[in-house]
Image (tube, rainbow, N blue to C red; front, side, top):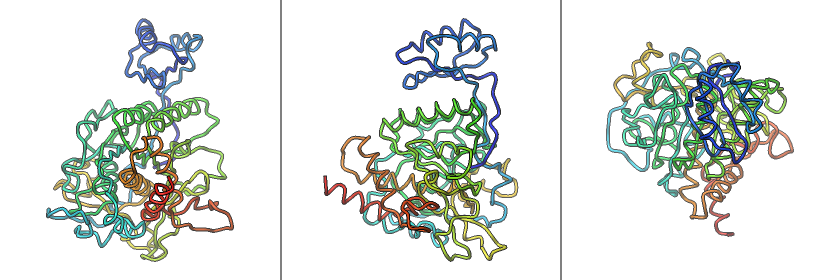
Length: 443
């Protein structure tokens, strides 16, 4: 997660047409004007193009059947690798052994305070652990050869929308790190929803940059392939006074609305800028969009006070909905490496992480961020949906979101609830499961 300026991509445009218009007719028109159609999204009335001239763009904007034509923007959605905490933390390696449904036998489970705090280990025994759910992570890719991810990824639906990196392999390690927190084999590390199936939708390149167009495409694609949950451990603080950003945000909102109508629960990182989102004159995207659960990060200091808001985490309701463990590293205040969050490292990230050798497919790293907090919520959503009766995807999504919010451990800094700082509180999977159980009984 990173705050960033959005750099205009003058060669790529998003064209949205009036409801009921023909995308095929617009595509043909773009071609006659010298442009190339990259993608079309029927549900959004959207055509993504490349190579239109300035004159062509002006002509299209004046057309009565066109809602908007906006240049795409490229954003640094996650920190560059040199801003991560990787080199300050030890690297751990595991050896393959039998996978257990109860993942407390994972080799490095003793370091995973995050799972104990949200009671994930208790949930393994009384839930379906995300069975028969698909969780799509929109990120930098994934390492399907890591011992804790082998067999966990639906390779048939995983895909890349990054033109310069057409495969799903993770050359950054961010996507691998995030995905393994959702579901793993329980060999070196435990995960929140061990039976959930993962899908990787690559929308960021190895530097952590990506375009609005690719993220919009990723959200729509995940909904179309039947994702139950979307995780977006990415985001940027952008100015609402920038008309181009505002228009792109509106299209991204429509993509989120489209996924919501398909019954998808969406979690996103709230941001790593230590901002009170209730007080700033900016917008955190995609976390502050409707139908997105915005997740802030908590962390201990020297393994004490686990529900402190992490030093970097954005906070403030309603911009931040809930909190989940994200880790922190504050040695100047007595913090230790184990206050960070442990997860898998990608063996394909050798160029960006030269100081760390993850090439043996069994390496783990410590890191921190709201990027680590968000997958805890996405995994809880998978568990709640797995345990839900079949009442339709949209109904299941609404109940899941309500139970994530109402099943929390409430942390109050005032007499109000939701709390002005913590929102609905820090997630508790048993609390969410009990909420779901009570709602089901009442129905």
